[in-house]
Length: 213
Image 1: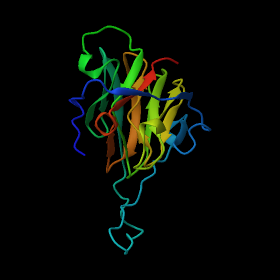
Image 2 (image 1 turned 60 degrees about the vertical axis):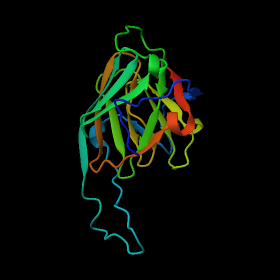
Image 3 (image 1 turned 90 degrees about the vertical axis):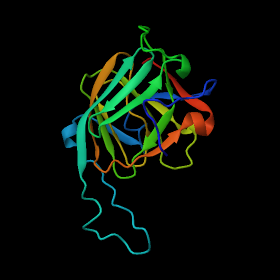
Image 4 (image 1 turned 135 degrees about the vertical axis):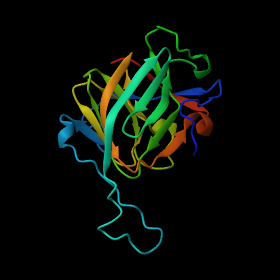
Protein backbone atom coordinates (compact mmCIF):
# COMPACT_ATOMS: atom_id res chain seq x y z
CA UNK A 1 0.00 0.00 0.00
CA UNK A 2 1.25 3.47 -0.94
CA UNK A 3 0.14 6.00 1.65
CA UNK A 4 0.46 9.78 1.57
CA UNK A 5 0.74 10.37 5.31
CA UNK A 6 0.68 14.16 5.07
CA UNK A 7 -2.23 14.34 2.64
CA UNK A 8 -4.52 11.34 3.20
CA UNK A 9 -7.38 13.07 1.31
CA UNK A 10 -10.04 11.30 3.36
CA UNK A 11 -13.66 11.15 2.20
CA UNK A 12 -16.29 12.95 4.27
CA UNK A 13 -19.17 11.39 6.17
CA UNK A 14 -17.21 8.46 7.56
CA UNK A 15 -18.82 6.51 10.39
CA UNK A 16 -17.13 6.35 13.80
CA UNK A 17 -16.02 3.19 15.58
CA UNK A 18 -15.42 4.05 19.24
CA UNK A 19 -12.44 2.25 20.73
CA UNK A 20 -12.75 1.02 24.31
CA UNK A 21 -10.27 2.96 26.46
CA UNK A 22 -8.51 1.11 29.27
CA UNK A 23 -5.60 1.71 31.60
CA UNK A 24 -2.28 0.31 30.41
CA UNK A 25 -0.88 -2.29 32.80
CA UNK A 26 1.30 -5.32 32.23
CA UNK A 27 -1.84 -7.45 32.57
CA UNK A 28 -3.96 -5.49 30.06
CA UNK A 29 -1.00 -5.27 27.65
CA UNK A 30 -0.50 -9.05 27.54
CA UNK A 31 0.00 -10.05 23.91
CA UNK A 32 0.58 -6.46 22.81
CA UNK A 33 3.73 -5.64 24.77
CA UNK A 34 4.58 -4.35 28.24
CA UNK A 35 5.25 -1.26 30.34
CA UNK A 36 8.78 0.17 30.36
CA UNK A 37 10.34 1.93 33.34
CA UNK A 38 13.90 2.16 31.98
CA UNK A 39 14.31 2.22 28.18
CA UNK A 40 18.01 1.37 28.48
CA UNK A 41 17.12 -2.12 29.73
CA UNK A 42 14.70 -3.06 26.94
CA UNK A 43 15.94 -5.38 24.16
CA UNK A 44 14.23 -4.80 20.79
CA UNK A 45 13.01 -8.04 19.23
CA UNK A 46 14.34 -8.48 15.68
CA UNK A 47 12.55 -10.95 13.41
CA UNK A 48 14.68 -13.04 11.05
CA UNK A 49 14.13 -12.37 7.34
CA UNK A 50 11.60 -14.94 6.09
CA UNK A 51 12.53 -17.71 3.70
CA UNK A 52 10.84 -17.63 0.26
CA UNK A 53 10.70 -21.39 -0.17
CA UNK A 54 11.29 -24.60 1.72
CA UNK A 55 14.97 -23.88 2.39
CA UNK A 56 15.44 -22.05 5.68
CA UNK A 57 17.41 -18.85 6.20
CA UNK A 58 20.81 -19.58 7.79
CA UNK A 59 20.63 -19.00 11.53
CA UNK A 60 23.61 -16.65 11.49
CA UNK A 61 21.96 -14.36 8.94
CA UNK A 62 18.78 -12.44 8.21
CA UNK A 63 18.62 -10.44 11.44
CA UNK A 64 21.70 -8.25 11.25
CA UNK A 65 20.18 -4.86 10.43
CA UNK A 66 19.93 -4.00 14.12
CA UNK A 67 17.93 -1.09 15.48
CA UNK A 68 17.48 2.62 14.89
CA UNK A 69 16.48 5.26 17.44
CA UNK A 70 15.58 8.90 17.83
CA UNK A 71 12.88 11.26 19.05
CA UNK A 72 9.24 10.70 18.12
CA UNK A 73 7.41 14.02 18.31
CA UNK A 74 3.61 14.09 18.49
CA UNK A 75 2.22 17.61 18.09
CA UNK A 76 -1.29 19.01 17.86
CA UNK A 77 -1.40 21.86 15.35
CA UNK A 78 -4.93 23.14 15.72
CA UNK A 79 -7.24 20.20 15.06
CA UNK A 80 -4.65 17.98 13.39
CA UNK A 81 -2.18 15.72 15.19
CA UNK A 82 1.17 15.46 13.41
CA UNK A 83 3.93 12.95 14.10
CA UNK A 84 7.63 13.07 13.25
CA UNK A 85 9.68 9.93 13.80
CA UNK A 86 13.33 10.95 13.77
CA UNK A 87 14.47 7.30 13.89
CA UNK A 88 13.15 6.57 10.37
CA UNK A 89 12.69 10.17 9.12
CA UNK A 90 8.93 9.71 9.02
CA UNK A 91 6.38 12.56 8.87
CA UNK A 92 2.69 11.81 9.37
CA UNK A 93 -0.80 13.04 10.10
CA UNK A 94 -1.68 10.71 12.94
CA UNK A 95 -5.22 11.81 13.76
CA UNK A 96 -7.80 14.58 13.76
CA UNK A 97 -9.84 16.25 16.49
CA UNK A 98 -12.84 16.80 14.21
CA UNK A 99 -14.15 15.81 10.78
CA UNK A 100 -10.94 15.63 8.69
CA UNK A 101 -12.28 17.79 5.85
CA UNK A 102 -13.15 20.51 8.41
CA UNK A 103 -9.97 20.31 10.52
CA UNK A 104 -7.91 23.51 10.59
CA UNK A 105 -4.41 24.34 11.77
CA UNK A 106 -5.31 27.71 13.27
CA UNK A 107 -7.68 26.48 15.99
CA UNK A 108 -6.70 26.99 19.64
CA UNK A 109 -9.39 24.61 20.91
CA UNK A 110 -8.09 21.83 23.17
CA UNK A 111 -8.76 18.48 21.41
CA UNK A 112 -11.62 16.51 22.95
CA UNK A 113 -11.22 13.39 20.82
CA UNK A 114 -8.87 11.61 18.46
CA UNK A 115 -10.08 10.35 15.10
CA UNK A 116 -7.66 7.76 13.75
CA UNK A 117 -7.56 7.01 10.01
CA UNK A 118 -4.60 4.63 9.69
CA UNK A 119 -2.61 1.96 11.56
CA UNK A 120 0.33 -0.31 10.80
CA UNK A 121 2.56 -3.03 12.19
CA UNK A 122 6.23 -3.90 11.80
CA UNK A 123 6.97 -7.53 10.83
CA UNK A 124 10.73 -7.00 11.19
CA UNK A 125 10.88 -6.05 14.87
CA UNK A 126 9.44 -4.52 18.01
CA UNK A 127 9.19 -0.84 18.93
CA UNK A 128 9.73 1.18 22.10
CA UNK A 129 8.10 4.50 23.00
CA UNK A 130 9.23 6.22 26.20
CA UNK A 131 7.76 9.60 27.30
CA UNK A 132 10.50 12.20 27.77
CA UNK A 133 8.05 14.82 29.05
CA UNK A 134 6.37 12.43 31.52
CA UNK A 135 2.83 13.48 30.60
CA UNK A 136 -0.20 11.24 29.99
CA UNK A 137 -0.70 9.80 26.51
CA UNK A 138 -2.70 7.20 24.56
CA UNK A 139 -1.76 4.38 22.19
CA UNK A 140 -4.33 2.48 20.07
CA UNK A 141 -3.34 -1.19 19.65
CA UNK A 142 -4.70 -4.39 18.12
CA UNK A 143 -3.36 -7.93 18.27
CA UNK A 144 -1.52 -9.41 15.25
CA UNK A 145 -3.36 -10.65 12.18
CA UNK A 146 -3.98 -9.27 8.70
CA UNK A 147 -7.73 -9.86 9.04
CA UNK A 148 -7.93 -7.24 11.80
CA UNK A 149 -11.13 -5.18 12.03
CA UNK A 150 -11.71 -1.68 13.45
CA UNK A 151 -13.59 -3.23 16.38
CA UNK A 152 -10.40 -5.09 17.40
CA UNK A 153 -8.59 -1.91 18.44
CA UNK A 154 -8.25 -0.80 22.06
CA UNK A 155 -7.06 2.63 23.16
CA UNK A 156 -4.62 2.22 26.07
CA UNK A 157 -4.14 5.05 28.57
CA UNK A 158 -0.66 5.77 29.99
CA UNK A 159 -0.11 8.12 32.93
CA UNK A 160 3.33 9.20 31.66
CA UNK A 161 5.40 7.44 34.31
CA UNK A 162 6.15 4.45 32.07
CA UNK A 163 6.73 3.86 28.40
CA UNK A 164 5.50 1.11 26.09
CA UNK A 165 7.25 -1.74 24.33
CA UNK A 166 5.27 -3.19 21.40
CA UNK A 167 5.94 -6.71 20.10
CA UNK A 168 6.51 -7.29 16.37
CA UNK A 169 3.31 -7.58 14.27
CA UNK A 170 1.16 -5.67 16.78
CA UNK A 171 -1.04 -3.04 15.13
CA UNK A 172 -0.42 0.54 16.32
CA UNK A 173 -0.12 4.12 15.09
CA UNK A 174 2.27 6.31 17.00
CA UNK A 175 1.58 7.93 20.35
CA UNK A 176 -1.18 10.43 21.14
CA UNK A 177 -0.77 13.31 23.62
CA UNK A 178 -3.77 14.92 25.29
CA UNK A 179 -2.88 18.37 23.95
CA UNK A 180 -0.04 20.50 22.55
CA UNK A 181 3.04 18.38 21.92
CA UNK A 182 4.99 15.58 23.52
CA UNK A 183 8.37 13.95 22.91
CA UNK A 184 9.12 10.24 23.13
CA UNK A 185 12.32 8.25 22.86
CA UNK A 186 11.74 5.78 20.02
CA UNK A 187 13.73 2.64 19.25
CA UNK A 188 12.76 0.05 16.63
CA UNK A 189 14.01 -2.38 13.99
CA UNK A 190 16.17 -0.67 11.37
CA UNK A 191 14.61 -2.47 8.42
CA UNK A 192 11.36 -0.64 9.25
CA UNK A 193 9.05 -2.88 7.24
CA UNK A 194 5.50 -1.56 7.53
CA UNK A 195 2.13 -3.19 6.84
CA UNK A 196 -0.73 -0.69 6.75
CA UNK A 197 -4.49 -0.44 7.13
CA UNK A 198 -6.53 2.53 5.90
CA UNK A 199 -9.73 2.56 7.97
CA UNK A 200 -11.38 5.22 5.83
CA UNK A 201 -11.06 3.38 2.54
CA UNK A 202 -11.18 -0.24 3.70
CA UNK A 203 -13.99 0.08 6.23
CA UNK A 204 -15.55 3.50 5.60
CA UNK A 205 -14.81 4.61 9.16
CA UNK A 206 -12.53 6.43 11.56
CA UNK A 207 -11.55 5.07 14.98
CA UNK A 208 -12.55 7.40 17.78
CA UNK A 209 -11.48 7.88 21.39
CA UNK A 210 -12.02 10.67 23.94
CA UNK A 211 -8.99 12.77 24.91
CA UNK A 212 -9.35 12.43 28.64
CA UNK A 213 -7.59 10.52 31.34
